Length: 202
Image (cartoon, rainbow, N blue to C red):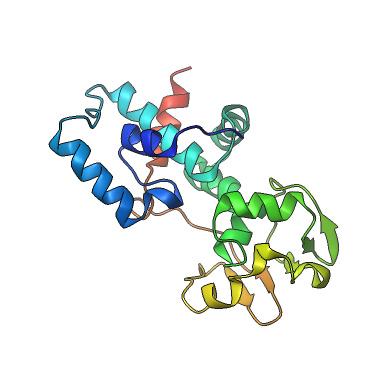
């Protein structure tokens, strides 16, 4: 998915949703923009706020508008729309590669998955959007461990915070989904309640 100028998008949305916008360099750039009055004003209408939250979530996971809308529509039909939407986003293969520490970013997670470097229950997969159910086991192919994509994994595994619904064996480059991710307001840069409200308008 082509995203565009990440600095401008992050400033417009008012959240550091990309890795490159979580650096000191970006913070300095943003501070200068604020001093010069060049940072976009936040929307004052409820619809505008909901639109911003939708864009924050979509860009955070790096998925297309069509795919995101599909997740939302499926979630709205469920008993717990908020949790269903969050689980659809979090249980994607590319996201689990990121959450496990095998990928530096979700974008790199998509690259790893698309290039066939990942195994799910021992079978090679190439679909970044594949949804992993509880009990599914993820591993990096032995033949892929020497790829430059995994050059920083060992160091990253020392500091990564793995969510409780995933167990990880860093030495073996293995992970397992052992539970469901639970959405908690305030723990993310986006508000999924506002996202659901946005789509409920149509």
